[in-house]
Amino acid sequence: MDLFLTTLKSVLLLFLMALPGFIIAKKKLIDIDKSVNFISVVLLYVCVPFVTFDAFLNSTYDSKILINGIVVFVFTALFLTVFLIVNTKFMTLLKTDWHSQRQCAFGSSLSNLGYMGIPLMQLIAPGNHTLILYQSIALVAFNLVCWTIGSYQLSGDKKHISIKHALLNPTSISFLLILPFYITNTNFVKYDVPGLQHIFSMMAQLVGPLVMMLIGMKAAEISFKELFLDPHTYIVSGIKLVILPMVAFLLLELINLFYDVSPIRLNIMILASMPVANNLTVFSARLNLNTKYAAKIVILSMIFCIITVPVSLLLFM
Image (cartoon, rainbow, N blue to C red; front, side, top):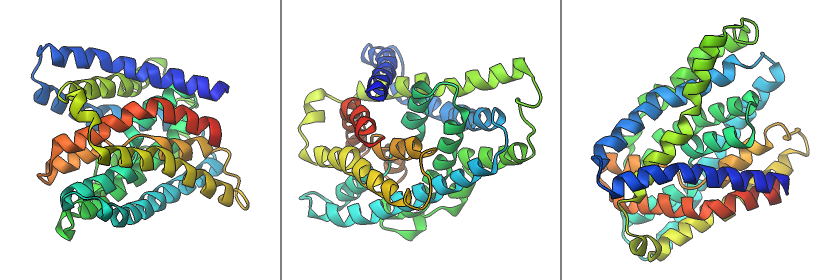
């Protein structure tokens, strides 16, 4: 029950951060598109890499942690890939156009692991750098799946698979850059540099406020009547927020028969229970698909996750 209340409070606090962005956009005080693009760039190229740097530089090397990180990476990659394949087949049953079916499949499979999962983890387990470390590793696997199988699934064309983007994105690069420092124990634990450490921490903590400001701005562009009247978006949210956490829990119970998953259980459940990935909107824009439809799927799942995420962690942790 303590975890349920902590998670519920954390999710509500995150959504409270979205309110200023929503009000500013509704009042037309800014150019929404330019502001969203700016915040997206800052998050991708500055804040998320600093999350990785901060987690690894505040952790002492431990081979068990590294092994757990590998397990998180493999689980994330396989879990997302399998659901992408299964949901792509399932969504063909929807009475809508081919591109919308693909967007629904993408949305019901891939979690908002970085822009929602990381700030939520920061609130649920403040100061627990090991959990953020695992989350950063999961994000590397997530990006790998997005730019390969995800791009192919959403477009139906192999030419959109980008190995370059899969390997040379800010998340992967920051992970590869910091890994030698972690392995050699060249970190803030060994070398006390309080000023620099504080800067890294502040940059990492910016993810939550900036993400939610961005979401508030995007939400201001969609009418609530339009948001709640599409039955397909409910199907996507149901699969993403209810089915995936249940399957993840069963898989964890199976794996736990021969490998102790307790150190990474929260990370896996966060992976499975997060709302639809914002990448759906980004990739839809890249492929000239309906970005308003994609945003509608993302935002509705985020509204529902206020209840489903705390319940999932209560039941499956």
